[in-house]
Image (cartoon, rainbow, N blue to C red):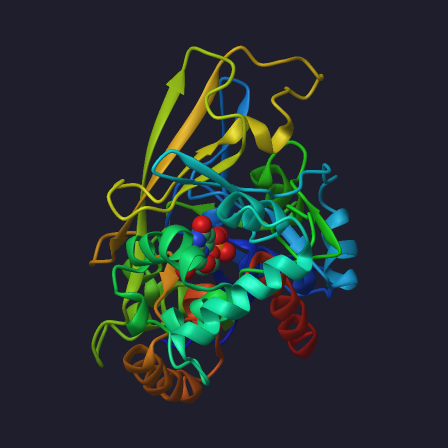
Length: 376
Ligand code: UDP
């Protein structure tokens, strides 16, 4: 069904960060854009919803952090960021440790006081493990921080999160975790960090301001009409879904959230507490109010609190896909889908699901900005 006159220059499928940034940039370049999303709301997985005066991160905690000045300046146009710094706490069978791994962690684990002592302890454990070239996450972790920290703070958590033993996971996953010989509890090695005041939904709403957005629209149900009306398509959904899983399913990890409103002001005293043992069924508990220092927008203390327990699970059709599983098998399958994608005329595949890539928010924005420049 080819139409001579096309209503839109771009049909953007998915109103998450990738879609919203492309929509903004292309609209500002004079293009006519339609954004659709199958959910009833915008903002994809960064969506926040206000409950008891608290911005609840409905699809998992999102902490904006970046070293990319251009991206940081860009997001400032759509939100003011607070000074939140991510410092999760690890709970291993009731023992509490600082994250990321730093001098507080090493002191609690081994009683060491100086950076030299900590380095010597890690080196000793690394030598005992006899790992020269780490081949998987387990070996990578042990050679970074030694066996004690691996056993108490990494092994159980990682196996719960990925549903696979650590020796069957790629080591790059753990490279996200910094290791420091300083007393610095800031989880990220980023120049810029914070949470948009008023929530991520508001930020994405500002990005999409003045742009036609239709929520609750499933692309695959209306594919013919939608495509007939647009010159080009930007698709941010799962790449395998686009091709109707014709080469088989890519694997994802999914997350189930159990949200609870508690009639008390403080449950755990921190935004994130990771449960790093293998027995506790959830991976972590998020207490959302601490992303905004326990206050509402007028600076008043909030009497209640909202917590989310996160349960990691294998994705099956019908679940929300969250994390791509970039192991060898899936990377190969993705490469095959990518080859199909390259043959699709006038369709761009982007974002965490479209590119099957473990992107952070700032990386998604950076690639969306880049692609938009090439499309203007
Ligand atoms: N990780 C861990 N223990 C922790 C936190 C993280 O072993 O307490 C490992 C785990 O393998 C995880 C990876 O570090 O998959 C990256 O964790 P991060 O919290 O950065 O991932 P996110 O879920 O926030 O994207």
